[in-house]
Length: 189
View 1 (cartoon, rainbow, N blue to C red):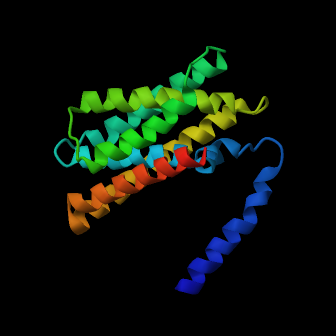
View 2: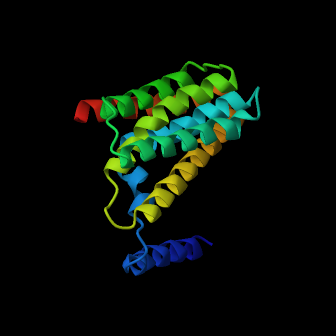
């Protein structure tokens, strides 16, 4: 079985360049994975939604959905040429705060959580827009949106597994990893 999985992974990796012909812009999907701060924030949203969903199941989809909607509004602002100050600082703070919310097992009403992640999402979306290619923008937007949803799902899944395996302590440890990663990103910059 291990050989089959290895073969599938190898074939998928080899097939990647086939998508590089015109009309298939994959950089939008790759974008959230290429910046550790974006990756950590997206996973952090999922982790916090997982924590909140223990008492409020709707948080599992409402909190990540609020992030996606507001990220797209932030991207629209960027594409429209609006100026948003302190974008990189907002992104860095988002990683640290999301990690801290999970570490502290902070449980707030779902609407408040949606507002918090929505604020951070505006910065992430704006940054995505500034880094978009001049051609294939629609594909870029779809790509970073799909990647964001995937990373939220990863955070939710990790949170649920950690909580089931070792309780809130495991989930809080993952939040600590998000915070530590955010701190390392700040130090490196």
